[in-house]
Image (tube, rainbow, N blue to C red):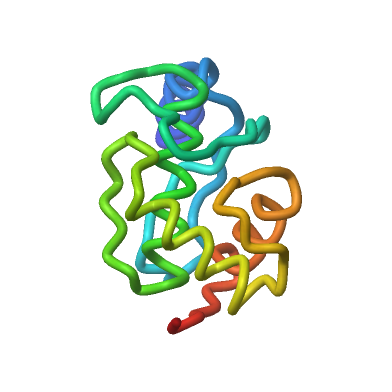
Length: 126
């Protein structure tokens, strides 16, 4: 009985997040529960449609903001708007943590590094 309930619950969760992409749970003991997308589009200043939007770009902005907040301890607002605070956190992450060109754009290389830092629970205090 428990197994059927667990499977049904998991199926319901997957169907709920299916429109966004595959979500991965935070590592055991990880304090942040960020959504993680299998399709991570390039995002930059001005992207996102706010906290109540349900589109791929806004979900990507929220995921990046959550991961930046975790990794950088920057108190990045997870609000779905890619504003100057998010851009500054991206630049700091790129420059000091990921050792990438600091352009403030979250593209494939930045996503890769940010996901790695977040999934491993690493901190970069800059």
